[in-house]
Length: 233
Image (cartoon, rainbow, N blue to C red; front, side, top):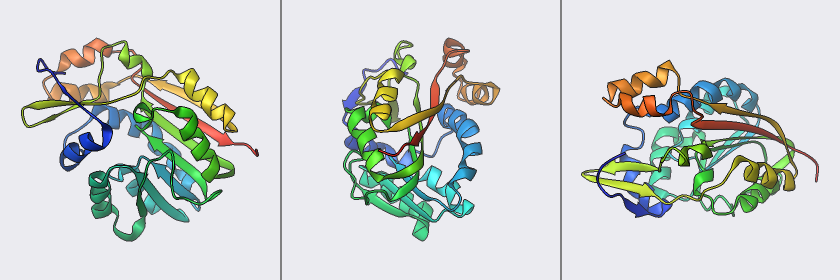
């Protein structure tokens, strides 16, 4: 948060600016997500894995040593994909495309990941339909994002570029909207976990000199992780 009025930018333009520094500073939300999502990665072994909204490839990098059959990352931002390419080399296929309309083949994935993407999607039903199109029957879809409740806390998706605060354009939704879209697309909810910051993340806030930000949301959900299974159509 900042006292300066933020400059609102669309997703692609914002990430063009953020990409060079995206992975450079400890991020409590990334830390919280990793604590809960990383233990689930073993199920990606021997799978054709697709990361929708792969960004700089941080999750593809973690999945790569687990011997997936293939790794594919899709993102609309050329700048983020450039960082991912440096990180992953030939270990993954990277595609610049809108995640609502990918060039991926039908029934080509059996493990789908979407991390911190949903807030930027203006039509969850379109995303769910595209995930269903590329998913094989029985495919797993793991979705994580900033919890929709954070809007009630006054949170916005922002970062600092030089002396300017940049706000990324987002689209509000509720968890029941996601569930409805996924159900319509023949995905069955396996679990939904809503997570709060813990002591590990508290240390990041303290190190950054912002203990008040941690105190403001202590015990409140700030992240969700949902697992869906693709049913036969």
